[in-house]
Image (cartoon, rainbow, N blue to C red; front, side, top):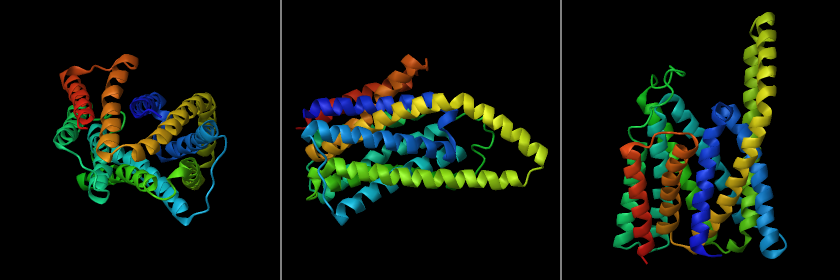
Length: 324
């Protein structure tokens, strides 16, 4: 597989994932809805990974190993934690600030690869990584602080709570990259498809359990309502859910395709390239391209800050590529 094409495809899939998530809007928000989304995307991602396996070797290579199971479970936990913590952070703080901290998650696997696998970075790549950080900051800083008018509770909770969840989301996101790197450098790196199928299966189980807990919690809360109020809410919810279920399934399925392809490519790249290349380029490129995509498809104004952020991101990718 051509590494440059794989990087470009990964950035494109990451951008598609961001745009579809934005398009999903309210249907994807909240712990219950996001758990349902994760369940659908995980199932689709398993199917996409199976297609990758069959198209590359004609079969799925299988190895019974505690290490593969442990890393797959860690991948699922970090992915679940990143999404749950990010959602919680946006509920009690600014979306732009949460997105900024989340974007910095790529630094963890980049540093990890340098320290534990002694990957040389070089001056150009160091400058490129710094510019990726600056690009993320400029692209997210000064944006809309969130839909404060529709959610008056946002921003009123303790700042410490927001920081805790935002940092946890960023570290969890970085943890996914670390797990990918460790797996690709292990003795079982030839079983990439098996690893991802197990990981997304674990994620589907976690998402199902979380969704079930949310549904049970709602039933318990509604059980305390007067019968007339409960029936009114139930009928309103049924009509609302029926109208949105088709839209939800389509968006979730398309999102699952992007997630499945992106993770297969990222897992390959984490072993084929140095961490100082893979993670800054995929994250920086996705940030820049997502800003352009939002302007094209959602008519969001770029503004001077975002244009500067995109320019810095492009320069950063060029410098990292020139780093050798």
